[in-house]
Length: 102
Image (cartoon, rainbow, N blue to C red; front, side, top):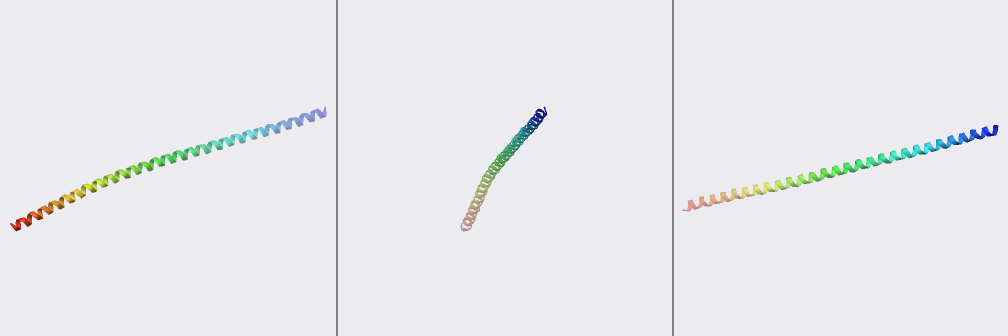
């Protein structure tokens, strides 16, 4: 009878140890899954941030191109104005010379 009781106590202890081991393994799996999920979330956030940065850079480049086109157009218009003024001044100078000669 004592040996049966001892056997039951040992079985209960073994069963308890196995249950603790299984619980520990399950807890470790849960922790691993949480870490993996966290890493996935971080990776997604990084990807979203990178995409947003690319969009901002693309927008800045487009704005720079638009500004450059405006500057080139303004420079072209200013050049035409200067050339027209120079031509008018030249024509006036020629008229003045012709009036002096005549």
